[in-house]
Length: 122
Image (cartoon, rainbow, N blue to C red; front, side):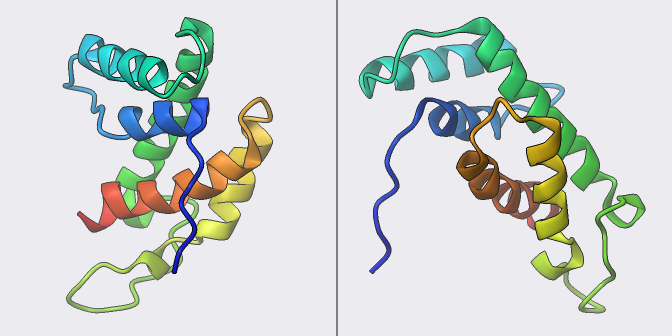
């Protein structure tokens, strides 16, 4: 049985931000984040902290949406379907950890595969 993930400020914010797209209303994501933080007693909404997390999400979203043109795209593992293995998730994760040292490594390690799933497989 998989252990239940402990709610964190960054984790809750990234979960909400993941579904924010360029055409989305940012105010809606802000409300969701504020509500989650308050409900789970994770601290006050910090715009600077959220903007950092949004930059991480935006960079991942943009890179993964590049598909085969991404620096972290390995190759198509299936002729017909996309596959998580099409991206070098480990190297992409390492790069994001280096670029965003202010974000806990554990959160980036959880977030990168989720982004590949969300932006590439779906």
